[in-house]
Structures are given as C-alpha cells and as structure tokens.
Image 1: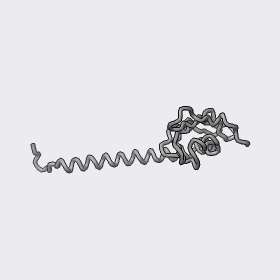
Image 2: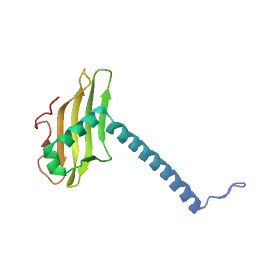
Image 3: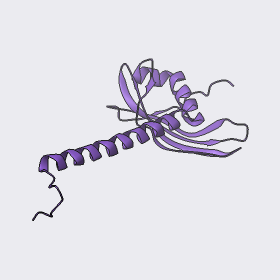
Image 4: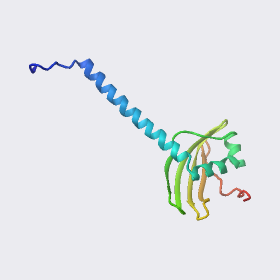
Length: 139
C-alpha cells in the first residue's frame, strides 16, 4: 500500500543504507579496539613485561628474536597514584613462532611493577615458559 506523497524505498536502496550503517558501526568498533590495544600496550605494566620477555633466553629460544607485540591485548590495568594492578594477555611473535604473554602484576609504592605471573604460552608447545623462574635481572 502506497501512502500519497511518500516515495517507496527500493529494496536496493534499503540494502545500501543497511550496509552503510553496518560498515559505520564496524569501523567505530574497530577504532575503539585499536585505541584500547594502544592504551594497554603503552601501560607501564605491559612495557616492563615485554622488556622482561625480550631479555629472556628461554623466550628467545622459543620464539626467536626480535620478539614483537601483536594486536589484540586483553585485560586491564588499574593504576592510582602509588598503587595499581594489571592482568593482561599480550599476543607476541618472533621469527620462529607466536604465543601469548600472561601478565599479573601490582604497582609498588616506588613506582615499579612487581610481577606475580609472567608466563609465555607458545603455540605448539605443551609447557609454558615461566619467566619468573629465570634469574631476575640485576637492578
């Protein structure tokens, strides 16, 4: 039934509008994910954890060097003035393989992150690499 004075939308035009809206929503969600990944990746906890990963002999043997962070960090970092905590899953890769760095840490009053969990799970390998079990770097 046609209403006088109103044009009927064609199926093709309606589909075009629907696809345009879906593309805009998808683009917005993608930009939010990119900003979240960037923010978590630049957090002190993630930067320090990646530094420890890159210093690890076992990680270098498993992934090769250089080891790079990949897109798709999951988790959260909560930080106040003199305290904080972080729980992260950081995708990483090297020339010999890929994996996930699992991070659990708390921010100490002196401004350094203290790691309670720093595990590298390597694809195709049964046992994770426990980076905390390796000798701690000299401070």
